[in-house]
Image 1 (cartoon, rainbow, N blue to C red):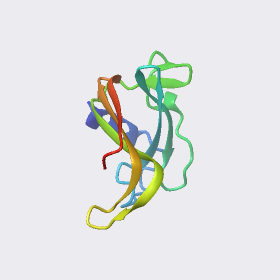
Image 2 (cartoon, one colour):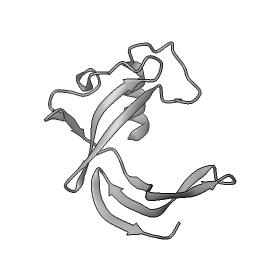
Image 3 (tube, rainbow, N blue to C red):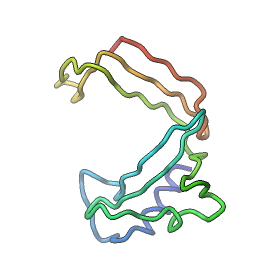
Length: 118
């Protein structure tokens, strides 16, 4: 389903001739977690960072309160936060004192955990 959404968004970009190797999907998405759900709240094209209206990609029925429930998204999200402890060159990532892990199934947050292990 995510590939299908990516394809739909790519077809409706402002400038589909613009390709950037650091943004291979051709857009940047902004997400919001509200209560136990994941929502898409914004899209911008990668070349000039113009906003892409959600209504250009999704139907009016999908957009509620200027956001789209991400029922196509099933995966885990891991993010570090707190004090920056350094950079791991072999993994090409920063490490932080804490880490949050979200387990998401069809847009619903199934589990949220915070750890101090990196």
